[in-house]
Image (cartoon, rainbow, N blue to C red; front, side, top):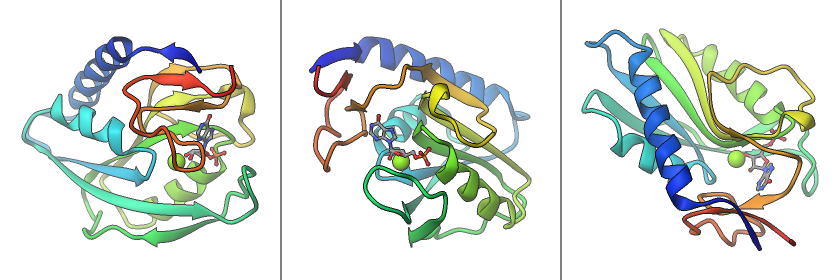
Length: 170
Ligand code: IMP
Ligand code: MG
């Protein structure tokens, strides 16, 4: 496996993102990070630890309908949030935006719950794969159309624990 982004590069970028996200809200306002499981858990853990005490967290698990690696854009909630989003500043934390279908659908559902604001932070983005126009407010790294693993991202549930991001089969 070829390393695409090493651990130091990721950590430095995550700290920058944490600062950018915090700077996007008035000082007194709380921020709710909503982690999209499973892929987002490593990213959120590092991001949250680089942020101050006005941050709280919740988790959501979704699976897309459709077969194999194809995304249909319709998502089913495996685990919904525990908290209400009403009048809160919400930041969705995703591992990667590929076609954008999953995120688009998820944003629509979350927006219907009347948050004060709704933003999205993705560690990785593959813009060449995009099928729908979806708003991503914070992007860690833009990458080519390669299948990557590590730092939360899996292949058949493996490699999520790698501290770096690697290209599979290279
Ligand atoms: P999409 O944007 O709806 O196509 O789906 C994005 C989801 O597909 C991500 O949250 C990942 O779970 C998965 N995915 C897309 N590209 C990759 C990759 O390169 N490695 C691992 N998972 C990926
Ligand atoms: Mg995902």
